[in-house]
Length: 283
Image 1 (cartoon, rainbow, N blue to C red):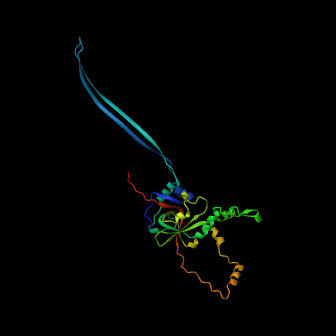
Image 2 (tube, one colour; image 1 turned 90 degrees about the vertical axis):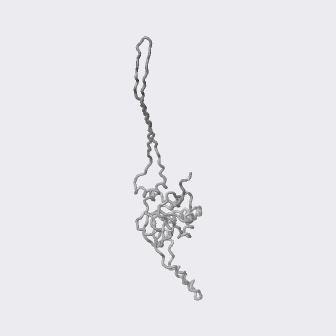
């Protein structure tokens, strides 16, 4: 089940830094960088003095004097401490989360809602595709050249190709009737925080901070790379398929039908976090 509040302490698996910054600026358009704390202390001492004495100098008349007066001492001290605030991405994310809607069991979402959904189990939908793409982007094929094409580096060419629109496609469940869908673009080497990988996001349950885009079907999570992965239906391929189907061959069997795909909420992800439980009051 999803948590009913946003966590105050968390670790960050993934963060879209540009989106977090822009969203934080839309909320307030100001970031506190410094402050001052003033402490004033003082002491005030007041006393009265009263004395009476007699003088008996020789050859003179006796003198009698009375002294009265007040003694007053006042001391004031003022201390001003200057505080510097470290505005990290996590601090900005925490500011955003304080404005998030926390839906009960991940339901009743509307398009445009800024939401935090906790207790989400993620699944990588396009795992086979993404493993191949990660092998390409890691430089596995760098240095393989085509002499007939002017020593074109195949690895470099493939990297520039797959980075245009390639993304992790994620499906999440949080104990509600509606699934969650999201994408994380493969747009750089440092995709995840603190040296995490996509596999770390698939272990246990995480929290998602993002903007709801309404309900979609899984096949609607398209990217430019999907266009080049459509099934081939050229005339020659169809002819080859017909020839290969001999009279004695068994008719093709349909795969088990799992039924129509269920719709779910698509969330434009700002961050994926792990809530951290902690105890207070220890000495």
